[in-house]
Length: 187
Image (cartoon, rainbow, N blue to C red; front, side, top):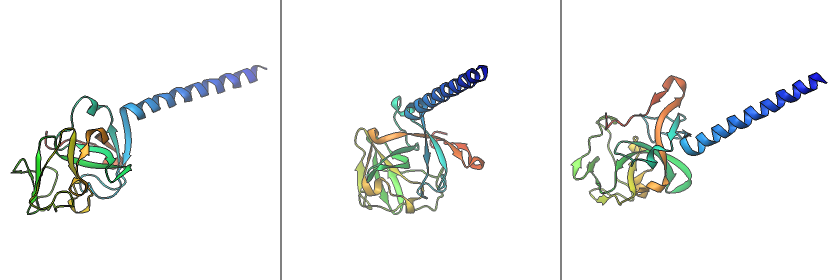
């Protein structure tokens, strides 16, 4: 009889431990941090296909995204998918593309801290060559770092803040490429 009581106590303790761990994981996943898998090459060379990024869900409740931040959001053309892109324009900014270069508020936007000087930014369906768009309140203009392989604001327009899931915080897989995600424009 003693052995049955020990087995019962062990199983009960195991179930309680599992439920507490699951509850903690759920709270963290729903409210604090969420993993995101980079799919495709739209952020190459700064992020690679199949890398896993930990996304901070809470930080943007207390601050606005800044130029250069890498954010994860519901994709405007496909809301069931999440995209990862870099913030290029914040509310009130004007954005234009001329001769393969990005202009922010009528000045050449210096992206040399995260893009090679040879990168050319082509226009898209939403932002045509030589046109200027103004980022509305509560919305952002985003682009992938791999301009030739990115579906971004040049094609489908602005991203509403309400669609932004969070800010990328840490690349954790593969382990040999683990690193913090820093905004190169604030360094």
